[in-house]
Picture 1 (cartoon, protein in one colour):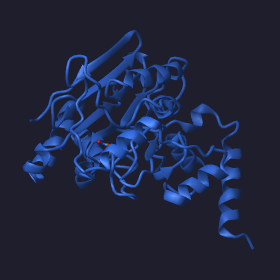
Picture 2 (cartoon, rainbow, N blue to C red; picture 1 turned 180 degrees about the vertical axis):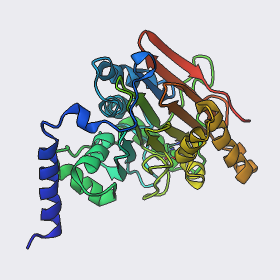
Picture 3 (cartoon, rainbow, N blue to C red; picture 1 turned 180 degrees about the horizontal axis):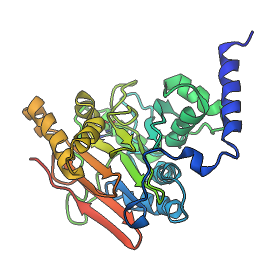
Length: 334
Ligand code: SD4
């Protein structure tokens, strides 16, 4: 009799085998329509989205899939040790562990996610493997690590000297006080961006999205934010559009933010209007709490339209489509 682990290993192998040779068209959503002007587009949260978009664009411009594009884009900040909010070099939790949250979703509504994953740089790729090689959507903690290692990911130390030194400084007060993320707060000042959410529309009209983060610095060990939660940190619906979020995940989870944005778009709101309505929902729930934190939503319509809205000043996003490459400051509530 097959034990459970063997079953999952075998099903991983057979699904991987099934993927080999599967045509690109087989991944197409019945709701795919060619991208506006036939030109694909990729958008990402914050200024560092620019580098992620560049990697994603290499795939999109060669008629690759939105799914491949968002994964490639998300891997860029994950691999950057100087980026202290995503992947390698992320700020640790209260106890000094760097724990990553990530998810990915495609045009067919397939999705995969990892939460509180330690020791693996490319959490987004583990999330994709959960999607493609298991019958599940989400793996967490030790189990997510075990799955990653069994599937060829390397075990690494993600805590850089800089992040360790800052954490040790923080331990002197141990005050959990999430900073409001503001890009380029001061002219020439250090950027203070967090989570990358990346959304793409490919040339064939399919959407894809990914979200990856090391989460709130100095969180309790085991805390999971919005970023790996399908519907909160990311949602893709090829009939309508895609959305992602950044900022204090607890506020996003309470309104299932990204799903809310997509549903508002389904009702006819533009991406920016939908993001704004979701932000206002957070404010209506608890205005005092909302005033103290940052939350930003970013959305992409299936027609290539896009927009964003944030609680606070300072949220930006990066766009890449053809020759267009921009970083756009986002309107905000407070
Ligand atoms: C989270 N939205 O874990 C993520 C990322 C973050 O400041 O650190 N926001 O809540």
